[in-house]
Length: 300
Image (cartoon, rainbow, N blue to C red):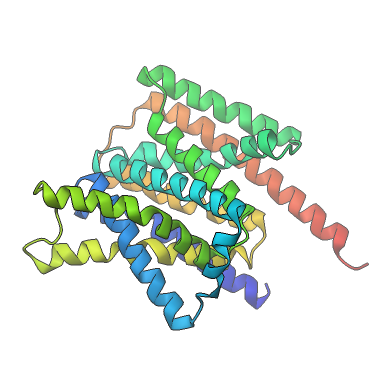
């Protein structure tokens, strides 16, 4: 395996391991309302990214953005999507819905396929159609069992899938793009923090230093796995990256069942099982196509 591929696997594993363990972090700050956690996440992430860009003397790209309205509009949309995704995820973890949050990220690849078909006019292979139908059946089963659609999972999958689509066609790199997104979200975040400060419900600054540290640390904790993921994406095929990405929701699923003791009935297992089967079909088909392309392009 080439050295850059080895490094890519390490970066991807670290990123998804990090994301998988996120519920443990958010459970530490569970007393803080989700909106406040999100606001601090945006503000401290921007502070961290600004420090990185300043250290690297990498601010030149920012002068070009106001001259490109379409680029700015795309990043406004991606900022709103990732903000909504973060808020839904924080709320889900802090209200005992880690299993449904993990389901959202298991569903995300199917949402990516659906978005590619409807918006990018991509043609689906038979295996992709089969995976999509089975995953849809799994979601329908979970809806019937719960008496309601799995709104948390669907909102996470749709917002992250849409975010991934916009970032796929974005002209800015990972570091610059994330910085722009947090800059666009920062006014809303500061407004939220200003309102809770005025009405006396702010959780920051807290009387103890450790609670304040948990809030400030949201900056690097948010930015680092995204940057690791970007580094991995440049070094790995989409098929390899797609396999590693299941590490995150798998860890979240394990935490939900065995650490947080969320209920997981046999009926619910059937729904999850259908989605896992769809992911297996989708992944094996991606590997098959990737190997076929590699064989076709390799020198004779």
